[in-house]
Image (cartoon, rainbow, N blue to C red; front, side, top):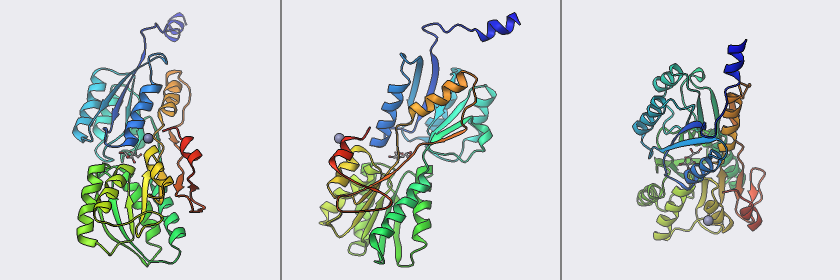
Length: 317
Ligand code: GZL
Ligand code: ZN
């Protein structure tokens, strides 16, 4: 009993911080920047943590290497925001063999869920469905000729938004998806893809879907350069995802018709799971971070909140 007691009563010295390794996707978007800042704010030394956040620069090999480094450092916890959905089984098995709990955050992976301990993130398929439902409500029975600028290839956010939107698009035989290409969740990518779309489809499209706000900013620049109008007063209906501060500013300005939120403020939820693990208490295997959608002033929708200045001022990021 004495031995057990002494084990249970392990003292936590001031420098005995809980070590957390966070294999972060990269720095590709405003969403990512907000997510990184949130982790740095929440997993502070004052809160009792030593956070080792590795920016994997949207590079899958670098992310696997970052996780292996966390294992070799014997971190107390490993958090992964997976760049790719596939390819995780081996390194997750290594973490499990090393006895290090793993939390998958933000995006999803295809590995069986006994290879990781918890998941905290958003449902990007629902985000895609929301975008489709809003577009149907907005267009009524008007035709839609749609161009899609997808996110990073193989990312669950890309797969989910594409799948969700396509589920709704399939219900409308007067909707045509003219083309769909990856803009890699970056502004430069969005601009390049939109420029190539304009070369191929100018005058044929009336809807552009960007799978994150930074791609939308690039697409807007490309359409401006080509004299193509978009937004509530334009020829093209523009849909975006993330609902970051600047994306919602453009929505308030009527340049983006609908911006579907994906909430990057997730660190507090992840910390809650870690604290339960640390205390040996039961914890939720999966925790969904809630999303909503926003539309430009003048648009009323059952699927989205109409933007106002106070909605923008009230946002956390
Ligand atoms: C979504 C997140 C995506 C954002 C992009 O959960 O993984 O990655 O939509 C970010 O802005 O690059
Ligand atoms: Zn701003």
